[in-house]
Amino acid sequence: MWYRSQSHPIVGGVVSLTDYRERFANRLRSLREGAGLSIEKASEQGGLSTNFWGSVERMAQEPCLDSIFGFAQGLRISVRTLMTIEGDDAHDPKREELNTLLDLLTPEQLLLTLEISKLIYHYKVETPTCSEPQSS
Image 1 (cartoon, helix red, strand yellow):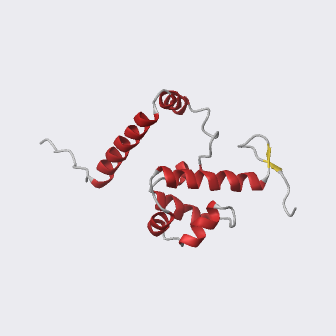
Image 2: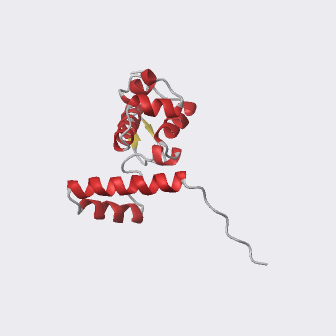
Image 3: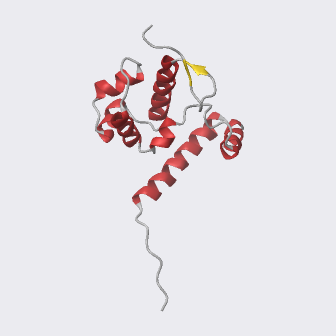
């Protein structure tokens, strides 16, 4: 192989570069599908080609920094959210609590929760914020 496993201080162990690529590809696909976006729509929103997006999801190509920002834009999420690979946020107590609550829901309740979350998100994004009236 042309690469070697390397220790990374954030990960804390030895992880091969292929594992990072696979984890990123899975994360990208999962977020896209969770948002209900086709590769065509997500790549259009992010300014990336559909062929490139699909090849990254299939681990045929590696993204560069510009592409990572394009993926985030295409998914309408922050780069931080995109780059939070499963297990990386396990120490976050709020995330742990959210996962515990979501585990209690039935599939139907999960779908309803997702739809409500999307409506709230779109309302927040599309509704301009009004400035507070100033008192004299």
